[in-house]
Amino acid sequence: MDNYPYIIGGFPTLLLDFEPSNFKYQDVRDSIFPLLSKRDQKLVEWLEYGLKPENLSHYFYYRIKSFKNHFLNEYFEFDKILRTLKVDYLQKREPSIEFDDIQEVTTILNMDNILLREQQYDKYIWEKVDQIVVMDILNIDLILAFLVKSKIVERWCTLDKSVGQQLLATLISEVRGTFKGVEFNEK
Image (tube, rainbow, N blue to C red; front, top):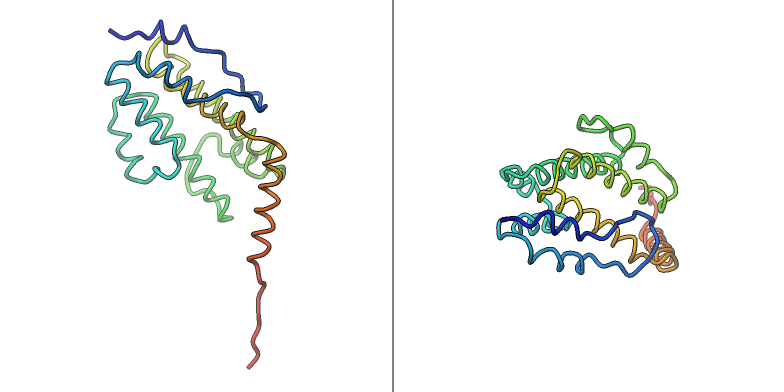
């Protein structure tokens, strides 16, 4: 028997406020995971695997489609679209896929303020996660959605503005240091 009402009823309130705090994804995950069935634990493991950028590949996206789980199918299809649009943007080419919200995503990606861009990007993902589970009531999909949102909250809780600014300054100086310009050799 699934414990969905019990598990979901114990969720803490998640706020996307972009402020540092002591929130830790692992604490939330550790309180939920043992209460799930083995089948649901596997779904959580696949979700976590897919949330690590180094694990994403065409094979992963192909494999996740074979799961009979609404949230994983919808979320990772959405994730694949966002990543494709981001690559298109970074390579300064026209979007290579059709997507209803392409204008909204493009607007976010075109923001000059990096911090605001990342906030809006995560807010957009947060809202899409809510849309995916809008019709779900006390099921594993709500738990998976909660875990995705927990990852977003943790990301912002662990950011320190001064460390982030220092990292950005270092990154910019490294990029500038690697650019040597164009040399013309006349022969």
